[in-house]
Length: 174
View 1: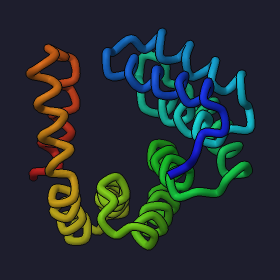
View 2: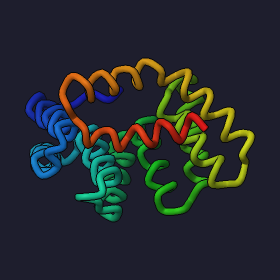
View 3: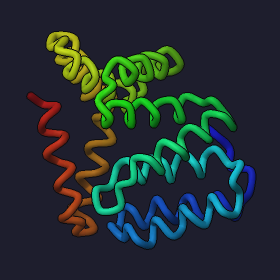
């Protein structure tokens, strides 16, 4: 993974992640903005904010996400930055670019659940149904512990709005 060059920046990025899990999107946005302001050359902060802006409907800003992710790639062209950019490409309808990002991630780490999920989605969008089905099965295998952890978090902390993510998991079970 990437190292955060400033402990203050790292704390802000982690706090943003926790606030996101608590569904405090405004608070998460403030922390991630502060992390980038404190250290604009920190790739991890740019990746975190770019992924946040891409992923959350209430604060979605695809242009802002692209700017952050492109800057992260300029700072440190890492697999996490490339994967986030691939997720954004899929959102923007560029499935072939998303598939290339997933494949690059899997070349670095073959058991990377997020790369497997992106590969499944990209193959599906490209009409490659059999490959998508196989990629979903591989994703389920790689993400099994993560799914159990998310489910336990939902139950233990009452994050009922996180159950929206369960529909995405169920989609992969098709």
